[in-house]
Each structure stands twice: as structure tokens, then as C-alpha cells.
Length: 139
Image (cartoon, rainbow, N blue to C red; front, top):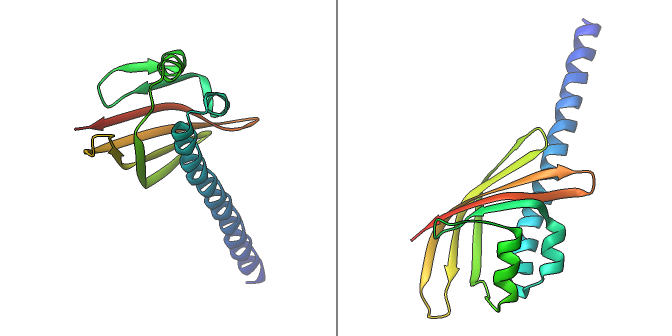
């Protein structure tokens, strides 16, 4: 009976430890989601490059697939991304990936609000989480 109790106790402790690790990772991803949106608002290309992988790719809301160089060239040409409020609905972890899904509102300069759905994919590297892919669909 004691062996069974100790086995169950060990299993509960291990489960709590694993759950704590997932919660820590989820909190880290939520913070990164906020941070990279702020960096876009600030047009901080240097910091953005440190968050994106070299092969970061975006299927944007206009249906165009772009990479890091395309985005940086757009920003350097003077393009300013509209303010976005993001609502995360689900974060799923699979091995070294975090998949973030939800909705966002884009506030254009002309006062129009666009509603979008998004998926962001983060990969865990030795130097932290990096954004590897993004997809946005909107009106």
C-alpha cells in the first residue's frame, strides 16, 4: 500500500512540475507576443530581427507571402504598421514549437478597424523563443 501511495504521490508531483513548466512557457510566449507588437509600433528593425528567425515568413492579410527582407525593406521605405490589439485564444506546445491562435483588431489611420484571425508560430532555440511564421486573415 505504501509503494502505491508513493508511486501516486510521485506521479502527482511530476505532473505539477510539468504543468508549471508549460505555464512558464505560456507566460513567456504571451509576453513575447506583446513585445514584438510593440517593436513593430516603434519600427525597431534591429530588435525585430532578434525575435524573428532568419527564415521568418508571413502570409499576410492581403494574401501575400513575405519574408524578413521584404518586411525590412517595407519598413525602411517608411511604411508604418497600423496599431494592432491582439487577443490570444489558444497556445499549443508541440516539441520545440509554440502555436499561438486568436483574433486581432487593426486600427488604420483613416479610423477604420479591421478584424483579423491570426496564427503565430514560435520555435524554441538555444537563445530563446523566435518567431518562425505568421498567418493573418482579415477583411
